[in-house]
Length: 446
Image 1 (cartoon, rainbow, N blue to C red):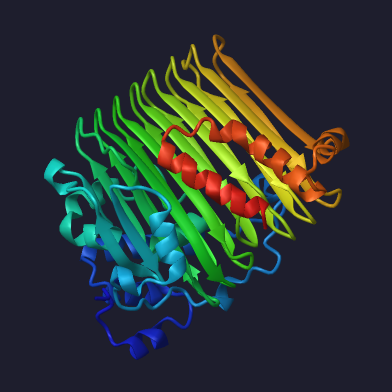
Image 2 (image 1 turned 180 degrees about the vertical axis):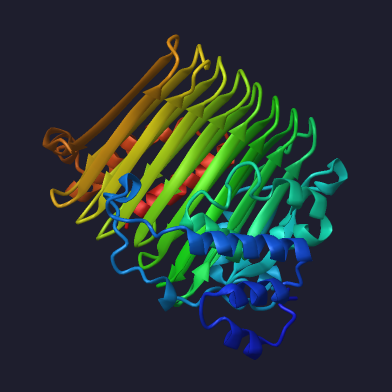
């Protein structure tokens, strides 16, 4: 059953453009409490006050928004009814079955489409539900954590728009010392047509908790997705998170994500960017407690005229923390990638150990990769390094493989797969690694 309660025709009339009335219509359609509407309207005011990115802004110098016109999109999708498993189409059933999980949620066209659970998580106090339901059933938790600690509404104009119009979303809450054995799976299909989508992931791991969550973002055509990811790790917690984006190559994709990490926490975040016409992703690790250990791993493979841009920040605020970043990308045709990353160590964050590396494999002379790693160090007893590489496939390697019976295409696919293996070897959950290997095989194989 859909969460939309107002007349659909009337709702479509109300969302013909972007305005405060659009925000009110979205909130009313979902029967939200007054406090959520107030937050949305405050975010809308922030959106109006903030400027659009300019080509002279350092973060946007290499990624232009030429062709992107917000007013050409419908603000948000009108969802359809819930479905049973047998009613799901082949693509969704395949994605659902590709990975063993404790529980799954599927979102489509702006709302929850399907949910299932293989384990009784609620008996241990675990909350894994769509964010709209969590607003109604767990308001005290959502009010406490939603866009208050990690991703804040005033971070940039796209975040403010997301805070005003978020639609689909997942809320994961793991109580103290609870361990969720199998991954939690989220599948979000971007609505097709000139429609906006605003998917939100909020994960809270209390002290000593452990959880793995996979966001699988697919589909869409000609629309845009403006998502946010919030990872909140309390002391001694362990979180494994993968964001796998495989949108249609006509989709504009914007993502803002931040992890805030307490004492002795352990985070491994895997960011995979396959699809979209243009992706601009801001990904931050914020280490707030001593002994924090954060890893940010990335894979991307733009083809055609895709443009993929990742901007990362590893910010160390306290002593004795470790962060590591490895982003590997392959590029074909006229594709372009941009990587810009900063390791920032604040005064007093002594004994910081941080590393950052970006590697690019250029498969065609018409492809281009820009890599701009950086360091901002304000402490004197640290070990911080960065590296960036860009190289074409060595003809010698191709010849070696072709001499053993492979075609050129097969040889190049094997080299690309080997290039990505360095990241795959660091994915700690077997079922997640297996899913990622299959996705890579499909991408490389065209």
